[in-house]
Length: 351
Image 1 (cartoon, rainbow, N blue to C red):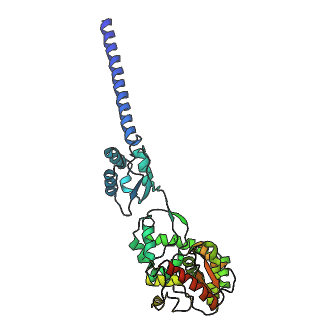
Image 2 (cartoon, rainbow, N blue to C red):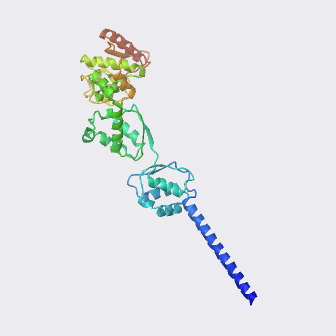
């Protein structure tokens, strides 16, 4: 009898131990299952960034992740996204991926909108379309959306510009902004930098030469187009200010090239000087209605800090160094012009 009880007790103990082991193993396997689905490495090295467009749904995100092979196991990603309630928390943006990221880390980044900003640097861009195309390669909005606002009188008026002079609002610099920045927010950011640049001191400098900040930028664009070397900018700016004060036409060749929208012109011929355009400074006295290119900060500061002189004429040097010969009178200018024209002829530059 006692031996039977002992055998029964031993069996129960073994059963309980076996059951406990099974439970422990099951919990362990479940833990490993959940760990791998949440914390196991899943992101591949196929792409450096994941782009989620404005208005995208979870299905759009999932399709991109699947098509671009961003994760090794899309099933576990989808399971984690469901359990972490990411499907209702999709946020647009440009997200930096790191090989080996877990589903949990990836989804936390996407759900919180923790995107990496883009760096945007621009300078010396001539036309609105060129500028819009360059910017659209860095942020989500396409070039048509950006040009549409640049050409919208109603939109640019709220910032105090016209569609002709709005280009002066963009101060060339290096900016950091989010990829999914809307066109409207992009303009707002650029205007904030414009206001920051135009300090009270700089506005006073502009007023001292009887120009508004916009007019300074317009003149700076001409100076920028004329000057191949930065150290000549203050002298060129001073020359044009002398012409403005005397009521003379600016007679700037780059304004003709801009007016004709032909940037292959190397020699501005007499037949071009009568081209009918408000940007033709051989026809019209004073500044053109807007910049002929995006003026650099250096050019703007050169206008504000121009070099005083009596110069009213200039002509490119005959050595093609990019520098100019300056003159205070027509006789000296004609001598300089003849030397340059002869150099052009010797090089067979006809247009």
